[in-house]
Length: 292
Image 1: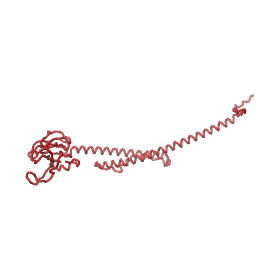
Image 2 (image 1 turned 180 degrees about the vertical axis):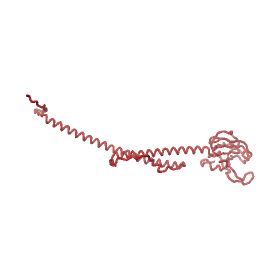
Image 3 (image 1 turned 45 degrees about the vertical axis):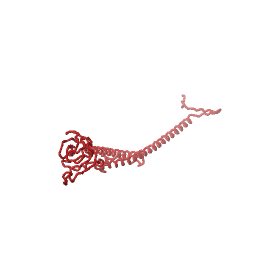
Image 4 (image 1 turned 90 degrees about the vertical axis):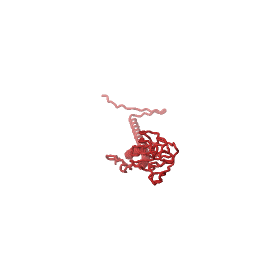
């Protein structure tokens, strides 16, 4: 019976005139050693790559944390400006509790099993901070929209309040008690007199509708304007009326010209303001930048 023999390998190396023969066992040991060395090098490379990525992740999170802190500082400044704008606009301040912009449910918190300086812990905390900043900025944006809307509404109301002088000139007689130039008696003057050259344009001090035009022994040629909000104005002693009853007016529209018709001692405009059917001092409605 023929006995089978296990195959063996033989490695033959030639070094000049020398020949070295190595049997299969040393070859296996050599290959095993190479495999082990390669495995160690591979594990080391993976470890180095992991450490590099870990360090890069720390650096990226650090940059994001700095950016988040910078954005938070800018957001605080913007919110302070927004609060000042609310005060100027006459709107109430937003309560500090509302500024916290809390949300329902538990707040996201890092796993206690991670160290405070671990990327996971820091990233979770950074996410929570960014979410809070987002909600705060959204609240501030809505507040600025409310301010804009409020200012627009106030401006629309002012468009129908007699808040500019109707003619450029010099105030020669103010609202209140005075000596009547014709009778010499101490009487109430229910408007203001603005002296100006004859023919000087007279403007509507606010939007409204021409309610009446005509001639009066005291006022001469006159125009009454209804501003549709409880305010009415009268313009007297005109030399010309340039609008008809029912005409719609905008602030600044020319409605007549200065004259001295009616009971007048010279060219001027007699200007009256009524609020809820009561004659009031026109000067309390004229904005300071609109002098005569």
